[in-house]
Amino acid sequence: MQSTAFDKLRSQIERLKQLATQFDKGNLFAKNRYMQAQPSLFDKAVFSTKSMKLADYVIEIEDELNSLPPAEHRHAYQYALERIALQVEAVFNVIKSTPVWAKENKYSFKPKTKPQVYKQAVKKIMQSSHELYDELKQNHEFERRLVLMIEERKLKLEAANTQQAAEINKEILALHARLGRCRKAISATEDKIQQVEKQQLR
Image 1 (tube, rainbow, N blue to C red):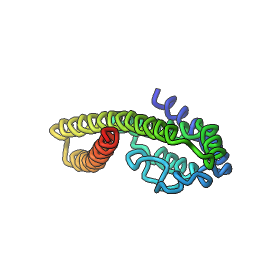
Image 2: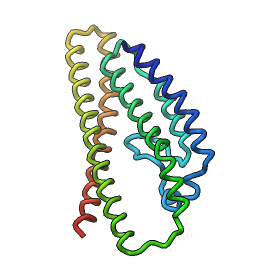
Image 3: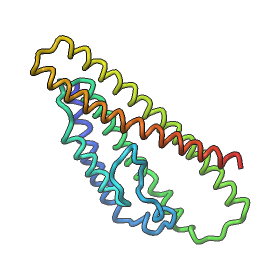
């Protein structure tokens, strides 16, 4: 089952790589002043890459796939696969919106009336708020799983010999590091939600 999920994911990533390259050739973001002002296409909780090229994010996904934990470490392996699946979905979502970007670029210099601008701004804020809450939910789920994985390792530690204990302790340290990053991402997302909600109250 794990092998099937892995193979499916690898196949998706291969397809994604081709689509991302095609998308980048369109230079859709290069024509969009708002996007050009952004440091990266995705939140740092999803990708560490900072680029305006989708192909660069696919490279990060490939690196993640190539550095998966051993399948024997079931929870860590499953967590990593799910994270990669989320990254794949995030890139696919950008590619799916190609017609939207193309249309937006086409009309980007068309004058807009104030009511239109206001409606679009409100819609954007609302959409941003929903996306942030989804992101927060995902991060809390990652946090919960990491805590469970740490507790599982601690239980194993009690019955481990010296060599096993050293290995388990390494895993616990690595999981704590990931948990720390996850909690930072949660705090960052909560801050963003507060900022968006303040804008809504104005």
